[in-house]
Amino acid sequence: MKEHFRNDDTLVVSDIERLGRNADDVIVEIKDLQSRGIRAVTLDVPFLNDWEKMNDDSLSKMIIDIFVTLKAHIAQQEKEKIHDRVTLVADFPDTYKLTGQDEISKTYSFPKSHSSCRKPRTFSTERRERARQMMIANNMVNGD
Image (cartoon, rainbow, N blue to C red; front, side, top):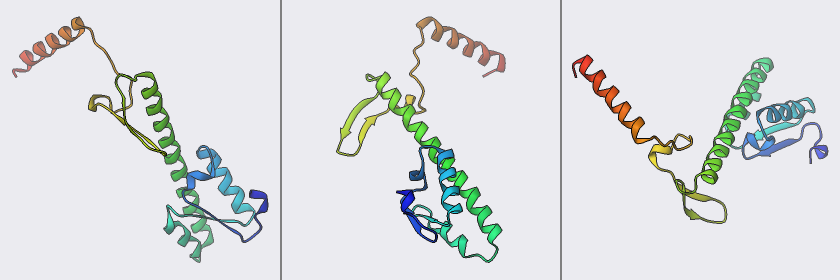
């Protein structure tokens, strides 16, 4: 599709992350479009399009570059978090239960103790008792 764009064309996307698979791809794609004179408009950040109306072209380009880089990296981190959650669901089906599903998405129950996207830990009774004894000893030393 890119080959059909000409100088002074405008590409409208719903979200800047749609321009690439990761942050580097998005940044390269934006730079390529800019170098060919193609304007990229993102619907998720409408105020970004107003910076191009400024008189100081170098300032507007710098602000756009900074924001695009930041937004692209945030989008990549979100994709990585989603991937981590999907992996946890697949690896621990007894912990993360499917509670709803429609044509677009699936909803899982995540126990509060596992909402930080880490593998569920199991501790032996012996290890729990040692931790309990350490806490009791620490409280006695501190006078609690």
